[in-house]
Length: 80
Image 1: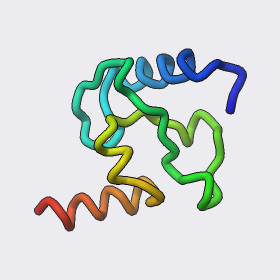
Image 2: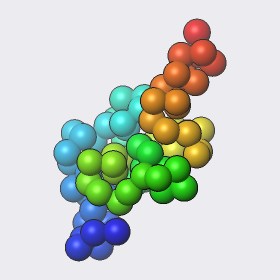
Image 3: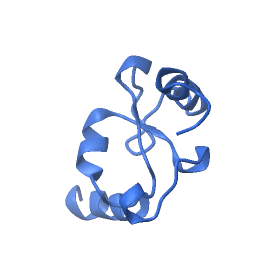
């Protein structure tokens, strides 16, 4: 992934985002944050820091294999 171990990477990303989920914006505890891929690896994404936000568990599960843009569009359609 990177030169960081997973917990260190997750902490740095969580801190970069001020402890908020990249998708719903809710505050999340650092221990509850999940490293996410804006563009999934299976769809050509990378492990670069610019492609790695943290998300809450529910957003990460809902997003699945969608890109960040596809997920945001899905949220707008689903939760009008």
